[in-house]
Image (cartoon, rainbow, N blue to C red):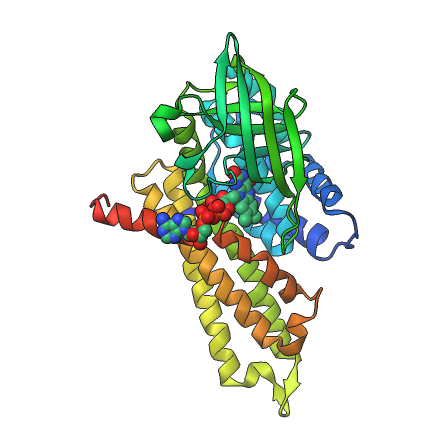
Length: 382
Ligand SMILES: Cc1cc2nc3c(=O)[nH]c(=O)nc-3n(C[C@H](O)[C@H](O)[C@H](O)COP(=O)(O)OP(=O)(O)OC[C@H]3O[C@@H](n4cnc5c(N)ncnc54)[C@H](O)[C@@H]3O)c2cc1C
């Protein structure tokens, strides 16, 4: 795997790994409401300089350009320690990357540095009640009135809804053009007409909810790029970040494998450790092999992203598809190896079992990844 990484990546990997060990794995667990935990995590990750990897150097970041490999390394290690920590880092990236790739100098200077420092929480609002996998059925409208746009519509499944101060919002400026008539805007949470409607709880800790735009007046200067660029901006963002979802899956699966090895060595049945049964050894071998294959696909896609290689879309879809599906199987086997202890609420594998599920859904479901891969094959692209 190291052939996709350079010395700077290895230093980052070692730094984030020891921070996670100290603060998320060995550290004292606090029973706080999820929103408070989420805010604290963004503050700590910002203070430690890890969120800085989501923006370019000129705007508070570390590297000249945002690197998928940095984000994969950070997400893998965070997910190994805490799915919520991984989520908070991931959404800072998702909510800022559209500004990085399409924002004006003023927009980048205003929004990116505070996000990089963890002082401002970001969000990305694309999904709607009637527009999930099919973005083209979007209904949120942005109508131009003089120098401003009036946004009307509802966005659901917005991670960080209610917590975030800065939202990248996608809305139709020209409904006749369908998906080519989508535009992207930066909307601040205190803009009149921006309404935080509700939050809901998922099976794994993740701040998420619904926001609405009720004649929300957004200055024309908040448009990202040009009118009609919205879909291009959303897809380019997802193309770069998709492999990082795979990296989070690798982190969860890595933790599951570690827990399974430890338990199988400690638990004795029929007069010997579980690890001495070949049936258990075969499970561990399959888990480790799937994990290694996932890691290779993820860092290959991240390397391709960072080197501007053709064929990224297909490879990042393969990485997300394989790594998230494999992580589900690995976590399930880890739980099986724990027997009854595996389903006791609060045990690490029970938590992993709940944490791993959403990765196969967000930023393009497994089925949508297969459509992308098949399309690239049938169009004979790569
Ligand atoms: C934890 C979490 C966080 C999220 N965060 C955000 C966020 O921050 N911002 C945001 O905008 N969105 C977010 N989402 C929304 C997410 O991107 C959508 O849930 C996802 O795109 C799927 O849309 P849907 O839920 O409407 O499912 P649907 O599109 O209704 O799909 C339902 C099922 O049908 C399948 N399906 C759909 N179309 C096809 C097809 N053509 N062929 C075969 N099968 C198909 C899907 O694969 C899926 O299994 C989040 C979701 C989750 C679970």
